[in-house]
Image (cartoon, rainbow, N blue to C red; front, top):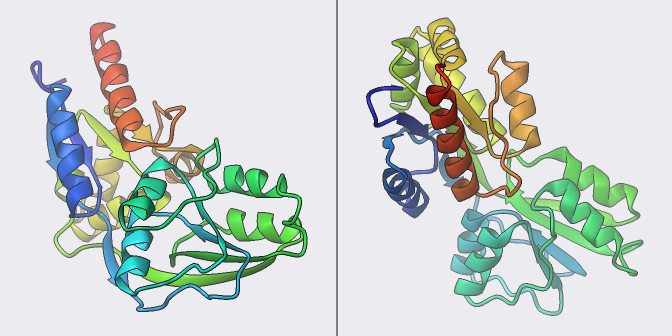
Length: 253
């Protein structure tokens, strides 16, 4: 660890989420490396209006449907995770269901418990990189599923500062918040000609992944994961990663 202030890469989109992540890491005594790996390109699509259930999976989606004036009518509105639920409520939507497990499989399990899910129309409104687990799980439960892509997620131009730091051995930790942040990190590293060195640098760093799908993607690319928090929130990820980093440093890592 660099002196007493660890250098920690954070890959949140360049909006209030990145600002909040930087503030949190600073409050935990870390030096954040703000390296956004996701940029939003809206498609201008809106969810269908004839669904029994509508599933929103992100704060970004909540903002886009609100900006478009979408009306859920009598549909049961579902959110994956408290952050998405809070974002929907902040823009005036009632949220009827938030699963205990903030994942696609957790939502499938919660909806399967609904007596009417078999044969129900379920609209899933999200990014173009949503997990097939949600659609397949709902279909397996007997639902008629339709997906609306609200926005595309692309790698921002100029990303990759954290990859160069990792390649130089100057990155103490990284907090990956989705499979796509892992993929874009490696793309940015390759674009800068440091992919293999960045992978080597991550082996000497503490790596956090927000959930099992993100961990799976990282490990499939040769990135060892040290931390997966119980709660799939950035705060839990950041705190867990910093704690693991300091424990490893104290044990002579």
